Image (cartoon, rainbow, N blue to C red; front, side):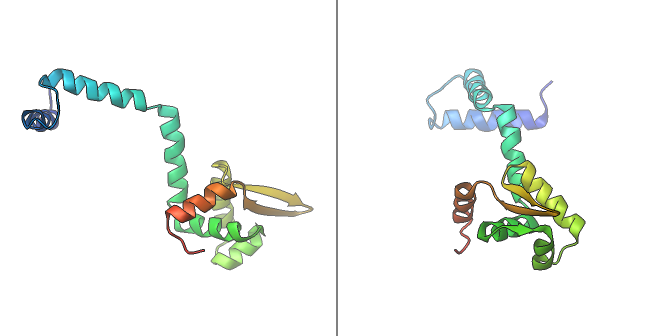
Length: 133
């Protein structure tokens, strides 16, 4: 049984078709065509990966870390001082960025240094976000 929301969507689509702004006259066929297009574009695994990437960037601390690491390689202790974080908090955020393959680590003795793994991608992101250089 259709819900009220489904009925409202159908009514809106019907009004759109009646306005002659779309070539179709068959509401059911046009709705099916729209669903087919959406299903063809919805590679669920790709969408999931891109969603996780965007979520990883939707955090003030991680964006700041990425900006710092775009400037130069740093260890956790440098990031904790620069961003006034505890070591566990810094490590948590670094782990998320590393899992998304935005940063990489390099070990030197007991020290672990982090750097941007995809500088062109990160610079494009900063350009898109209109961060000053």
